[in-house]
Length: 268
Image (cartoon, rainbow, N blue to C red):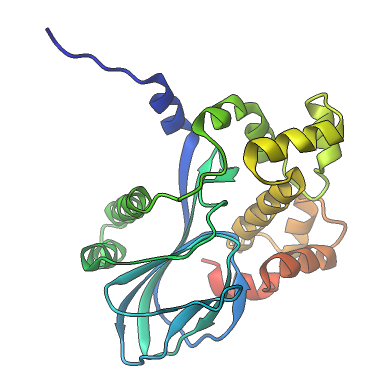
């Protein structure tokens, strides 16, 4: 008799879980700044001739040296101080692992993960350099997925069951996030008082709805900035900021980097 196993929840989560990679490069970079990125960063060192290149957690002061064969995962919204010179070559990948493009599974992670895995480092290098760009893209996704599987966050924002139960909420935010969407209007859409909605949201997801909306807006803004087809003024209008100035002030406050600088550094 054939064994037949079916897990409906795994099917649901596979359809709702999204790995989004929006920046991949091999670089030598002379950079000495403190920034809070709206994406998770996976970085691995290929070679270095300088022993004093490192990432530093700006809040704890812990340093992570850039050493060949080592990979480093920096969770989103972590304040990172970069100290690196042109003597070091590394791979940098910005990604999110999100439930319906909204709740990143690493958003509750508070630690930087560092591990030695030369096989993965070489695999990423081969995939990025693959002349078949479609196959290379598949390879990069496979390696990033494997890293996430092997280094699963110690704390998830909430249980998988809670994510599934609140699919409508995340879908709504994904479709309507802009500078005018606030806790009051979100609560009204779901026919709740703002105070009741806020308490329930914080209890379920471990984050206030205001912080969640801010993160979602920063992520959407960073995606739009990475594409040069629209001007910053056009992006401000699309996301319903009152002006380009207020968009710039918001983004700089949240990330530590001005939109024009971000676009110059990370646009296609």
